[in-house]
Image 1 (cartoon, rainbow, N blue to C red):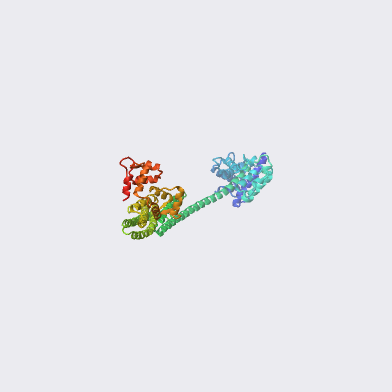
Image 2: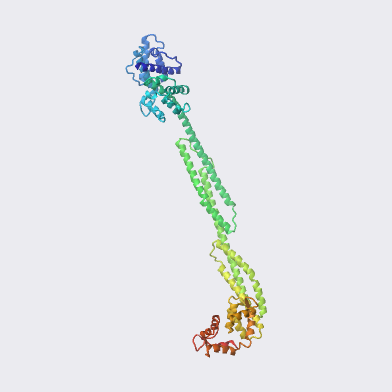
Length: 616
């Protein structure tokens, strides 16, 4: 076993030495013991791996003492580097003691190749083993526990390559049982693509029961250094990429800041220009809509701008903080896009907002005041016209035909008054929409004016009916004035709608109030004949009928006999007496209202006095 690992170590270390000598184009050694015994190649090896020149040594030693001096110089150089050479002297090397020569070389390899492998403060071997374990941890087929048995199937070598360069081999397609193939593949790829020399042969790993630990460590250390160099390049690339990402991020943030400031300024300017171009008119609806639109702007777009301005402030602060974090020069926004510039624009916006809002409110107040005045002027003038017409009606006098002519003239004035009321109603609606309930310029509401117009119309209608009736009455020469007055009073009393006509029921009630009664079938035929088939009878038709039925029938004597009969020979008549004679209630009410009270009986009526007052 000793001879086997000595042979493997000798072969591995020889290759390792020659690789180092290649750096200075120094000829290879073939016999490790013989050529290192001179001390020259040993010194040259140390100069290369330490990058430190060793002067004054025998470059062509011919004597043993010269060789010993050279080797001593080399061993002292190693010891000066903090490496203890236990039981190894210059004579051992000069005497070509293979075991000690290999021990010396292993010490050199540990010091200059493996010792700088530091993983969590562990020693060289433990540090290299920990590195291997971490790199192969993702591969469940690999379990690196040492530098001997763990490498015999070649998968550990392949895993190290695949972990760092997955493009070089397909690890998951490897056959775990193909030990030689896996190992050969790893050695070939490592040499061809990674510059790692084949310090070991396949059989050195696969064909012995326990591979030489030092040889495997020496070879695996080459993987560590190769991938560490790769890692350094990758780390440098990552640093550059990270820096570029930071700079790109900062540029994007700065660009975003400038664009957002510019966009906000443009939006604010557009709003101000729009307000300046907005023409204010005297339409309350238009001005109210402007106010609504302005409030909507404050509750939506303005709040978005406030939030955006705050975010822009934060963004610039974040930019400066990030620059300080990476020790970079501070960022100064371009002229016109600084926070001070934005604040100036913002203050201008607030000023324009206040001015525009005040203009809208002032115009609305003026519109409301004008609406109040317009309504008041129209209402006052309307009432004035009603008063004029009322006065004209009250002043009508003289000849009936002349009065009728003047009344017709007055009626023609009502048409424009009706139109004026419609105009006032529209003004009232505008005032209502404008919420102008109070009006100090007039006391007349639209309801007051409508009521007053109705009264005037009713007065005209009544006056017209009165004059018409008086003309009819004047032409009735066969009736006494007392009779005409009685008939007219009855007619007016039962003309409930003041239409100067009587319906069938009203006509029947008026007749009953005058003591004239008809059965229903007889009355229907009579009314149809009197009204000439119409639903209502005019005053003239009523009077003509009364003339026809009262001739020789409405004398005071006859009426006195009728009352005396009903009262049962008493000098007074009661409501009960009238009810017992089936006098209709409207007639009873009328008589109670018009007849004088009896002095002899409470709640009785004196028909004698009534007849005396009624007839001449």
